[in-house]
Length: 137
Length: 185
Picture 1 (cartoon, one colour):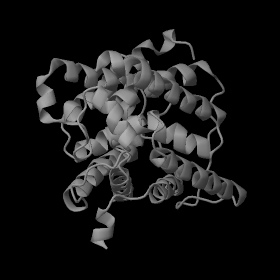
Picture 2 (picture 1 turned 90 degrees about the vertical axis):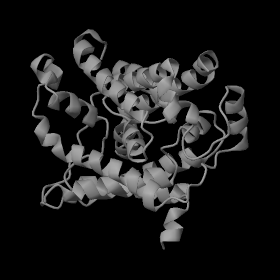
Picture 3 (picture 1 turned 180 degrees about the vertical axis):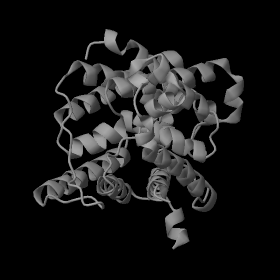
């Protein structure tokens, strides 16, 4: 099955987010209160190693498993959408204590009320689609 | 081995594995970004018939939905086979701050006040989870990505729009934590 590798990678993601406690509402609160290095350590390590990996991929023009060059699409240069969108996202992130990935990992963890937040996330995404053309981008 | 895996993982192991996942996705010819799935779910539910934003070939994103299924399974595997049922080890300062807001000291991974089954009986808690979810879904699509897409993939590629988004994430998070939490809880 062609899609199995994505399921397996997702499982690894779910396990690492759980075992590092990054899915915990408490950990997100601790981060926003600057009371522990834990979450900064996770994100910092991931970004530093990620920067090195992306640099090497570009330098050696590495290819993916099908032999296609790995390309990176630059993001549109704009401030309002990233700033306003980011702030709105941050409000929800701190309130629910989970970003989109951990929402679903928590579901696997059997914290069932998170389904309400997931439903909210889908509705919020739909509302963005409806209002998109009226928002500053 | 299983015993070691069942302990909470240190931050540097976690950060390294997350970077590894991003690289694995690149070698699969995809890019790591979770919140696109929320758009895919809208499109798969037929939102494209009414709203052009969802009118695209979402089936090309099937791989990302499979990643989502994996993430759920990963959470289940962790809680069922890799957990000692330990309490999340947050700092004493956070426990004290949260106590003042009415949250009891942690037991397990999540506060019962928000994620316990009893919370389903409270209108306020339902409204908070729903409202928080709305902000997450709306904001991540508006900003064009969430923590994985911007903070991990975007920053790794030194994209300054991602840095703006991450700064936004923190502005929003700090407003919620320091200005709104005392009003809500």
